[in-house]
Length: 105
Image (cartoon, rainbow, N blue to C red; front, side):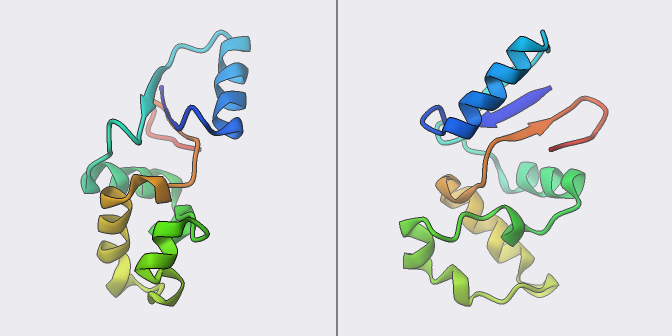
């Protein structure tokens, strides 16, 4: 199991505490430092059954700079969103937990 976290995020710290309390075996990925590739983001989206705009923090300053609220939310724009998430990992809603069985939350 892997958890993508931002250590400054209270929800991420809570998720790690919960995993620790359950004795879960997991690895931590500080995704702001170890930025996920577009392929990794695509894989997580497939596991979650979500679209990239569903895991995008649109209130971040960089989201406003990019004008993300105006970007189309349709299949043809999917790759553009994924690239933005990879180039600006602060936009990724967290935490994200992926399991060996292919599931994610």
